[in-house]
Length: 199
Image (cartoon, rainbow, N blue to C red; front, side, top):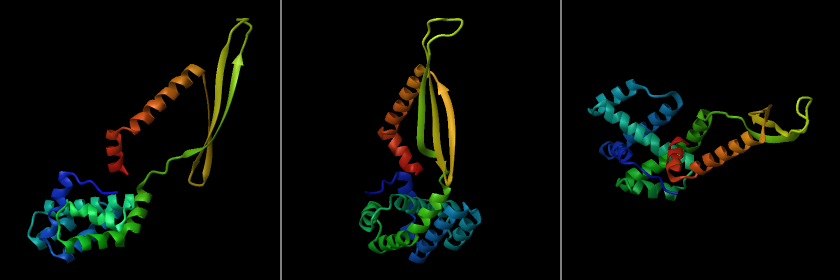
């Protein structure tokens, strides 16, 4: 699996060949720190003074490197795929090896940071359901009033919860159609591109 770079990412990473390999290594360290603690403009300003370039250039370079490292770590791409991905950027062989080394050294830590940043949402454990049909009442001798009762068991971390809800079959059918439509939308190419950037 290869990474896909937008023109903006290519432009941001385009600054890396202009600096020394030790600076690229420092940018990698800053990118990992950025993931842990957030952006720090003072670091960009200090590096910009040392390199005599605008701080936005430093910020864009670090953000481009962060994109490269996080996307590679998320997808757990192999060494070969990583090298093939950065070939598109047109960097020297020495810089490509340095980027690969940065990726391999930080991959586990970045995956751990991304795992901690991901929201802990409850997920499906089990579903119990029952169909009740009221055939008559005092006011109406002949009626058919079906009701579906569901108990949804969810698990979040180590805790389990249960949600009880009741609906009629028409509403349940509508809900099912909406969920199927949402599932079909998730499978669309447009949505896949968005999800790749979110993960």
